[in-house]
Image (cartoon, rainbow, N blue to C red):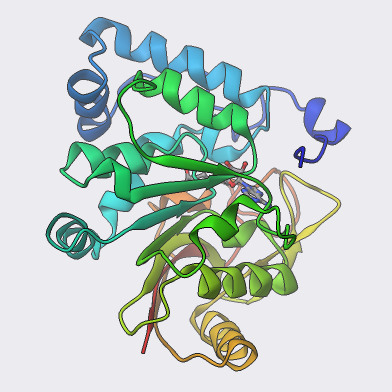
Length: 294
Ligand SMILES: C[S@@+](CC[C@H](N)C(=O)[O-])C[C@H]1O[C@@H](n2cnc3c(N)ncnc32)[C@H](O)[C@@H]1O
């Protein structure tokens, strides 16, 4: 099924909005190492190479994570759970799905740290982002991970995601649930339950924007929709609802960090009422979660 057309509000967006940083002065060391050692890009080519891929990606959908180079954070490795996840993947050959993977930079980080690439999957709406990921990391001929292209809300039998139903041990979801309103986040969580192996220890973890005041907020890349921003309580409540609707039980571990240095904070368009001087919506924070089947 073809991904939805990008609406004209997005197509018209200029590059001078604050969620687009024009220049890249430095590349953090782990991302540079990945591009030099894993992808074989010469050191003096790293910055121009990233800029070239980023410009192509921004013209597809101007996600703040693209405009602000958040994809260079390799966010999976910043999770406190990362060493445990890596161990499970290397020693127990556990499978992992990166949901809404975009360029799949976190897949490459796992592979470069020793996880078997054939046990990793990526789920993504847009084939163009997967192709850009191959171009960014120059591994089209070597990476054995499988990318499933489709809409997570497609519940037809043709959905590619059904190929892995019940077969995934670990799901990573970064800046993904927060794209949707409450009801759609519940649908995504119910899909997560279907895809995960139905055993104790199956886990979904990730991070996204949250807010101390849980509510539906204006969506920044789809201004006709809303995105539900959770705090710890609303995230737990959502998983109770999902537990009931799926007949499953989940141990939910969640934090909301509202410090000024959180990477997820600066995605809002501004200036607008309710935003502070850094275009940060009052009460915004970074929500980290680990939800494990019990
Ligand atoms: C904000 S980006 C986050 C990308 C990546 N996880 C990261 O942390 O950098 C969200 C990604 O989810 C994908 N996506 C959005 N809606 C989707 C849907 N309904 N089904 C599958 N993927 C979707 C987008 O194409 C995009 O690549």
